Image (cartoon, rainbow, N blue to C red; front, side):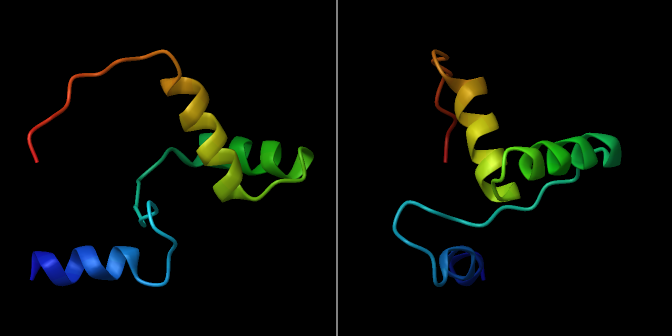
Length: 65
């Protein structure tokens, strides 16, 4: 079952990409959507940029998989 779930998360996506679902505060999501619209980018691009900037320079420990 887990293998099927993992395959579906990557179905139709380029290598190195996967789908993820998050629960977020509504006010923060609206602010992010407004930012993305203002910058003329997709929500996906805004989230990717936000995560990349947040994680830049950090060296977290790798968790067990």
